[in-house]
Structures are given as C-alpha cells and as structure tokens.
Image (cartoon, rainbow, N blue to C red; front, side):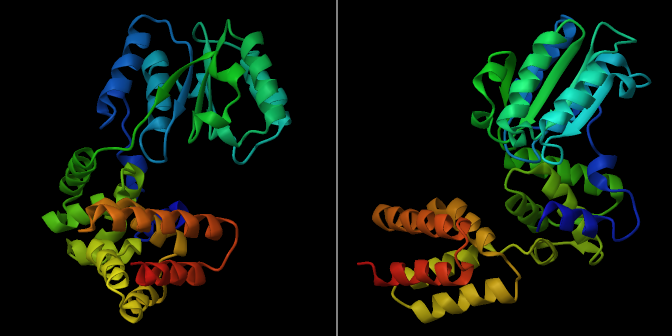
Length: 327
C-alpha cells in the first residue's frame, strides 16, 4: 500500500490522521533512535547547532526530529515563523534554492538563526545542490540547514562535508510494537497480540506505515487482529511466501505459481512488494545455505528486470521456475 493509499484509508472515518495526532513534539518522545536523539540534544543544550544531514528509509523519524529541534530551539509559539520546510521531490530545480531558500535565509528574527528543512534532498538536481552549497556558505551566520534524504550517497560531497551526518536506522520491532499499543490504548482500540505482530511485520521498520495501518484496520471491525491487518495492508502472510518458495524448491511449480497468482490477483500485491517480502524473509525460511543463496540471486535478477520495466508476473513466474529447475 502506498503512502497516499494509507492516508486515504486513514481518513476514511473523517477523524484526524493519527500520524499527525501522535507525532512526537519533542526529541524525548521519538521512539527507536536513542543514539541519534542523544547527540541532537547535546547540540541544543550547547546552543551550537551545525548544518545537519539526516539519512535513512522512510517513516523512521527524520522529519519529526527536524520539527522537534525547531520546537525546542524557538518554543511552541515561535517555531513556525523560524522554520521553512520544503520537499525537494516536488521542487527539484535550482530556482527553489535561488528564490525561496535565499529569500527566507536573508531575513532573521526571534533568534540568532533560522532553520531551513529540505526533505528528500537527494531528489535535488546536481545544479540545485551546487547552488544550495553556495547558499549554505553565504548564509551560515544566520541560517541552519537540515537536509533529509533516503540515500546520502546522492548528496554531493561539498554539502556532506558541511553537515553533521546522522544515519537513522529502521525502527526495531519492539519500538513499533510499543508505539502501536500505546496509540491503540489511547484510542480505545482493542488489538490482539497477533494483530500487533502483523502490524510490525507489515511496517518493516516504518513507524508511519504501522500507525496508518492501525488506523485503517480499526475501521474494519471492533478488534484489530491479524486478518484485518493483512487485508488492509495488502501484505502476504509470511507462511504464504514460505509455502510458495518451498513448493518451487521442491519442484512443484504449479502450486508455487498458484500461490503467486493468488497474491497478485486476490491479495492485490504489486510485483515489487512480492520481491520485497521475498528478500526480507529469505533467512527466515527453513532453507539450506545453498538454497538461500540461489533464491537471493534470483530475487536480485527479477528485481532488476522489474525495475527496468519488464512484466512483473512474467519475471516472478520465471523466478519460481528457475527455483523449481535448480538441483
């Protein structure tokens, strides 16, 4: 399920979106990034915040950390006036840097510096990043930049060298489970242990997806259980993925293909989602090392071909066929 689909499902009841309702307001409230938060708090305590670069996958607290920093530096009443947030994936060109960022950076009030938060900075073109680097130099006395990205390798070296780099890791299962239970209790939602486990599995370290899935599943009945979670997230059960791979390795291609067809048509999974679940589950299967290596090799090949535009079902069936024919 895409983020847009999750938010649509989450707002189906007309209630407030829980990812915003329960977004941490301070660094202390952020779950699962203790080492990063400790270092950020030391900067705030010393009143010496450098340019920052946050890297890591989606839904793990990068944007929340940036807004929490602004709240703690400027206070609840003044932080919005001193904080400019831009999404580089929507505004990728050099004009964004030249116009909006420079215009904001030229004015400073209510403090020694203002904060520019540039989300998905790895989407900026090389020309825009070069312009951003010059802007960071020009306004370093009254502006601090916080850049957020999925892949720090896509940020040019001159910018990286001017930032303190923080690498956010996917959230632990324990952190996701604790947060979902806390929200369920606050909303008066009954959630089973199996339901929490399913939320954790579907989220795969992404807190935003876990919370959106919880809110969406809560609209389907009185209890959020395993069945409701897998249905609303269009996620295959781990045992379905394992059965499909096991049947293929045992040479039963027909049964493996039938399971794949069910996942694609009845469950509504995209080919890329099947690949992702296969990849993260390889070492959880009861496979020999040779079988696991063979599966990883086929997954990598299928993933590349799908990314290049090949037919998803054809490539996944080819993957299963190759496993069925392996010795």
